[in-house]
Length: 405
Image 1 (tube, rainbow, N blue to C red):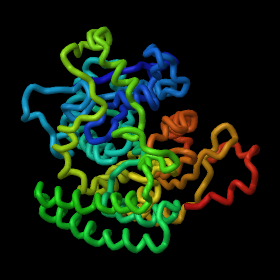
Image 2 (tube, one colour):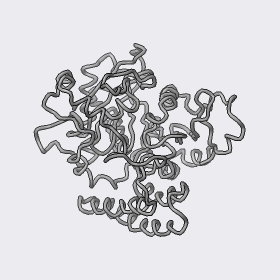
Image 3 (cartoon, helix red, strand yellow):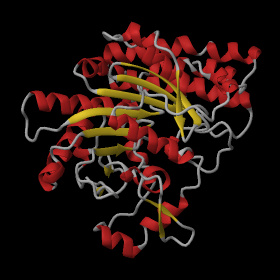
């Protein structure tokens, strides 16, 4: 598996080790590295420039290409193509074991798993695998402290059913169109239940095809070239963003030689990996999270307010409906402001080890849209101070009218 490792920019070897997983499935973590929260951005002339808000400011940071076949991670055997979270989480656990063998100075550091989008599937499975390995005394003990999912797909039954409400709430569709979309929800829920019951590839693939019609209908009714990752924007290209610079940069012969991947052509997202994972989409990965919460693992679910595809409303609903010992206290917890530099950057609620944060003025890619706030979120979360509202002295009282979910 191919990875980048950046030691803390502040030369703080005791800072937490943070691993980042990009979703897709099949999209390279180099997308986040160069466009979101890595140490560098790519300039127009393909030189590297510092990202003032890279997460290496507050951590020792790993970006890994996974599953196998993503980015620069490869195998010569078709047997290494992954189709489910069990095999992916085992690969990631093995990767960590080897990583900490090679970087023993960091083996005792606090460890956090982060990522976005389809990593809402990867991360809970990976965290559970680490927790299981620790309890069984497998290999090197990994000091897992928490995991964070940004605009993730975690509980599809709840999240796909939320598309009509989010679309109406944001005026993507009108009230008369709303019923057309809601009519598609029950077949989706039934298909997901059939997937959960049988677990067969065909049944779960059918669920994927049935449920995606809900989002398709929202887009059809909207009638514009909407960017599903940020409803304030229009879609540009296959991934709705211009990501050409990272492709051009990483496919330079000198760069690939320096990285030791001379024979691999970089692509942003792998179609074979995506297709191999279709039957995994409608699996519910929320089910493993309560046990991790009970074990004291800190869980942060955050979402930019303008994302459609993994919108904040769907994430907020599954988090509230999740059954664990702190559920009642979490659901009744007050919304509190997330303040950065005395400006309102979001709202959140928290109880025990669980925090939900709705990030303002951001879409699917929160660290790209709000880099300063995202870095501050990481800093406070890993330091255990995220649920402290912060200095509100510059915020108008009228701004607090939006402090509700």
